[in-house]
Image 1 (tube, rainbow, N blue to C red):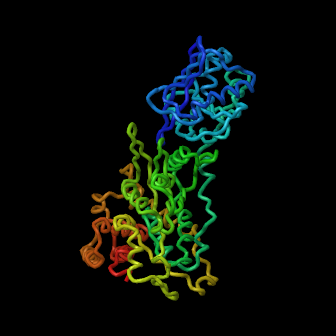
Image 2: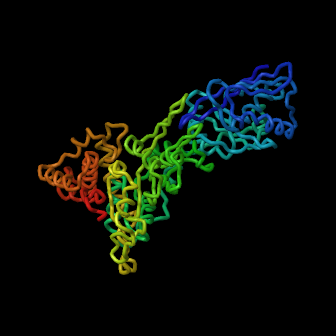
Image 3: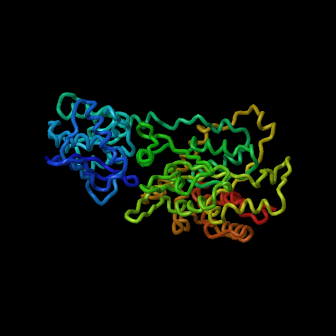
Length: 511
């Protein structure tokens, strides 16, 4: 007897349907075909133990399980449940005609209990797209799948519950989540606040500009000056995620298995990988390509602390994603694209000892060591960072000041107003939402400057030896400063402030 059940496989951030055909016929043996990996091949042992535990029998005749399309590799233990139900139906131990109406996924324990799986959101989206009535999956994943409307999400805790549901002995109400209400009640809630930072007004200003225009920032200063503290507070002034951004972000975290059974992500991600991270872990990849840290930071912030300590190869692979806001991973048979629209916030010491240019402590690094340390970060990468900010230590008087600093709640409305201006400006462009995302051809029109401004910028470029990319970035930052000020055109003070944020381009900065 031939039985068909339907599962799903995730490739990149999208899913595609897998047809699982089970035939029980004369002979002996159990075979899974269709390019299964070892986890799927081992499913026989899990399924056999679970069936026996629940009072069913594994057919002692020949059982063949085919997973189509047969030319695409299938991975993971999430196919245990659809294979088990297919075997039961093919061996006439399960009496139902409803199996083809549902996508079925779930990893089974030896007693038939179900364990959570990855990538549920893209699987549910694809199931609705292909017209399935619903999806059967472990209870831990139900809230995530229920984000997708017009799809019956049937949450089961064991194989037995799935069998009882199909045979009509158990009525399971579909899991329902009010996505809009969930999204509205889960507004950005950050424990870190800019009110915690005493002094550092110029750095707060730079981060406000970065948040308003989606710009990349590098902070350079001695240890203990507050670089990490400031970076961790940046998400608290970013605009709240839109519903579309929340779905995109949740999809990536679902594929990577980072949701932990939760539903829709409503806060912008903040990723801070350690400097020992590998190229693949940062950008993504592997045999079955998985999203890396830059994709997990999509629509949020990627913070690289102690930038020169990262391997040079790791930093260089970021150059293209910083420009294109996506990363493409190519394999012999498949090419997968992950979104990577993130803000890069980097911090570094000015030298190995950390005290070059310190107002009180003396640098003990030898001649040429400072420049060699700074050279660990390549020029092309620095070119792609819009704001270079020098962080100086906070004085005792600033630390003990009783005057309350501006809170994140004070700063965010200004950022929101600037972003609203940009949304209106780029409403006709689907892929552009902030000044930092403008392509070079658009910069000339939107970031037009006066003759005096052109003279100022020409002088600055000649003195600092700036590249054409740095020229564009200065204009983009100036446009954001003008947006924060509510100005129609870029004025000289806006341009001067933007030029000031190219400190690492200055000749002789490191002596």
